[in-house]
Length: 430
Image (cartoon, rainbow, N blue to C red; front, side, top):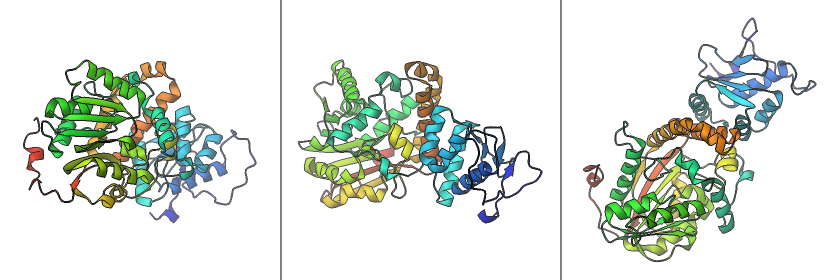
């Protein structure tokens, strides 16, 4: 059916009818009885998000939907104030209102968000959890970068331990060689996959930009015999990594440094960054490219693993404000700003989008089992915020709104290269 011909079913109506578009005068209490103007606003909201097969339930229990037989979920708007806020800025206020409980979802939250995302992707209109609002962006200068990272990663190690893998605290996409793998197995497989791409050999030197809780750095040293310097500006993550390495036999091969990637010095055979460039800001890619160019040896390899998107855009306003200040997943074209100015050659690009959806599936299950404990640690709005963030992230990957890129590169004059990709797959267990 053409959009101009779409009708909306309202429970209690004797027939399907198009809501009037001229009733725009607000002359009623903010939380009074539902009226025609409220239904008109819902109709406008449905149109803006491409008419997905979801229902809206208003504060009196009345439903507004396209087809009550096909709705995949119901978004409950619990008061008129929340409806107005959604109309004003749906990208931001859906997250705010869901967190506070003023908006809720009946049915599977992932299915609801995935349905909306797919509808928006098709219609190219705006989304509840999509790109918007450059005015809320947090810059990533030296000072702001620390504040932005502190906001997200220094929430508390105990919190992340509740739902990340128990072995190495990997907060990035896992690699499921077999979909039946456990999260722990898939995260180990991810690290092997990266190491094989980088062709790590005993005695090589590696620099890692953004090391999380240190799992990959210690893994590379333990399994592949390399020496690693790992940089991170999250104080709690670095303290955790340093404490872990003190109690291992790797202290002579791994060094964790609490510093900005822009301060990396020295020469290395390998550069690796997993899940960091999303946070540095696209306007600073030239700085990262210069760092890589200055530190990589003549035959050096590098790998950047990053959430990305198919075309340039800003991160969803609510996520950027409440969860990930300063973050902006790049398109592949934008990522080239790191490599092209320094004539770095791209060797391989792999998209692990569905692997990230699978990773999030595991994280969500673990988060759900620890929900009550996390709520005691923080509060209910915090739990709802993070549950929405994780579910929304999974929906972003299942709907194709977000991608996961692994980009392998080297110096342009390096001819010491593999002819095929056989080395990546002939031994998945190393």
